[in-house]
Image (cartoon, rainbow, N blue to C red; front, side, top):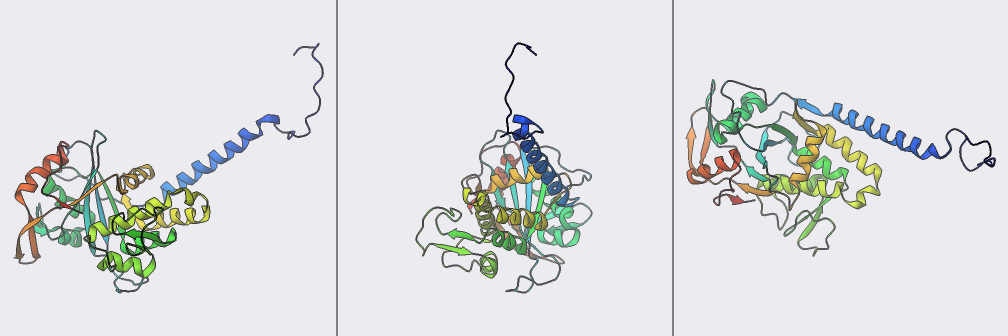
Length: 320
C-alpha cells in the first residue's frame, strides 16, 4: 500500500460487507440455487430398470436409440381422473445419428410379431402386457437388431397435464406446433383438458388426419415449443408448474438423466425430426396372442442398416 496516496473517501452507496463484490455474491447464490434445483429435479425423476442386459442382447449400433412409449392411463373415455392399470398405447423408436444428422422417429405397430427367447412368439403389445418395458425392449431389439439405449414412458393423462401446465397448446393442420405464428382459425385449434385427450385418442379435430403416434408427438412438440418460448420466460410460475408436472408424469430408464431428457425434447420438436411409420403386411391371427402383422420386407431390409450404421432412411416408410 502506497503511504503517499491520497486517502479514499467513504463509499456509502456500497454495502460494507463486500464493496463491489456484492454482484458476485448474488451470482453465487443464483448459481447455487440453480444447481440445487437441478439436483432436486434429477432425484425426482421416476425411474425403472428397463434396459437391463440379457443373454444375446444386441450391443452394436452407431448413434443413440430411444424407445418412447405412451400408455393409456385414463380408462374412462372422457375423464381425466380415472383409475386402473396401464395399457400400452404407442411405441416409437427414435434414432439419433452419430454424425449429428436429422433424427429419425419411427412408429412401431403394436401388433408386430416378435420371437422372444423364453416367451415364444408375441406381439409388441402383448410383450408389454406380460413383462413390461423389459420384455417390450427385448421384442423391439429382436426385430430391429440394434440396442435400445434409453427408455421413456408417459401416459395420455401425463401428456394432457403437460398441455394444461403451459396453458393449452395450438394444433394446426399445416404447422401443428407453431404456437406463435398467425394462422387461420379454421386450420388451428388451442386445446387442453378433455379436448386434448379427445385429440390424442380419436383425433377429434376437423383437421386431425395423423395417426395416433404422430398425434402424440405433435402434442408433445407443441408443449415443448411453448414451454421454451420467450413468452414462457415472462411467466416463471407457469414454467415451474410445467417442470413439476414433467417430473411427475415422465418415467425414464435408470441410466437416464435430466440432460438426456433435454436432448430428447429438442430432438422431438417439429423441424428437428423426421417422423415415419412402418408399413405392415400379412395380417393374421396367432393363438394366445391375437391379431398380428408383419413389416414390409423391403422396408425392413433398409430400416435395419439405417438404425445400425446410419444409412439413409428407407423410402418405403410412411410419413407421420
